[in-house]
Length: 129
Image 1 (cartoon, one colour):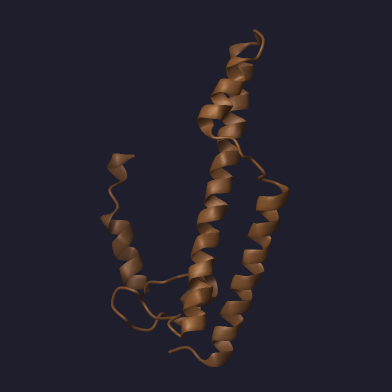
Image 2 (tube, rainbow, N blue to C red):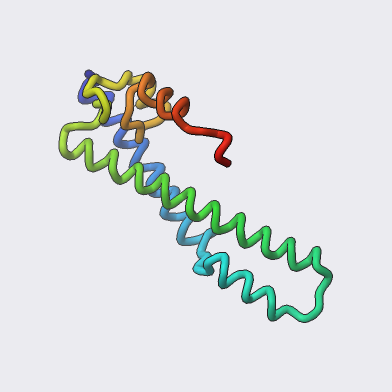
């Protein structure tokens, strides 16, 4: 089990990262277009070179992907902060054993021990991509 001081370090890291993500979402990734909307916007372009249209679509797709990634990470951070508040942080959600402090220090939002995190990756079928 991690100590109170170690838990406070993890909590500070989570709050710091949470602030960074919120700032990024507000300032840099203020993209409210869905991919469909972006494509329809592109169809109204005058007859530009197809590569220009593709570049614009690629840029918008990348912005949306970064926004979705930031939102997903923010959700994990919020769950970890809630777990700290409830006294369940640092405990694997699968087996109930303590998550090593080194893992929490590297990934403060981790909710699984290394064994179960590795099992999740092994269970993922990379051929389905």
